[in-house]
Image 1 (tube, rainbow, N blue to C red):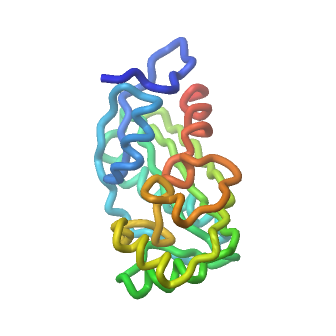
Image 2: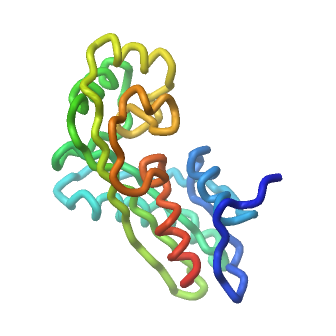
Length: 199
């Protein structure tokens, strides 16, 4: 087993940690910080109301996910997260089908968009919660129909906000990333590391 690429600077151990997500990408990213934790997927309904504001929407969804698990595990530190792609003020969530995925990628072509991940840490028996979000700016190459089809043939996108994944053939779509790359993948490792160190 490879050692974590990042280690926490703590004098006391953390309580047992639960990741309230079934995302393999988030599991892999959290492993960079913690050698051991439990995974308990949250099935809390995700809100889509952009009128809340981009960062607030992601934070509220992360909070809903974390609290849905923390009720059953009050002595655990539960980590919930929610990632959305925003083109302007419009949230682009997971596409319903490939036709919608094509439309999303076409709209993102040549544009700069924001990827925002909201994160919630909660431990019920200590009546403690921390809520934060991270923003990364991503610029796409100009994509033609053939570029989009080639990407869709290589990557399963129906479970991905904005219809793409930076870590899967992302070079075909992405020209530049300004900010945390792990945030685009689904968990802002740098900000989460700081939050866990101060917990």
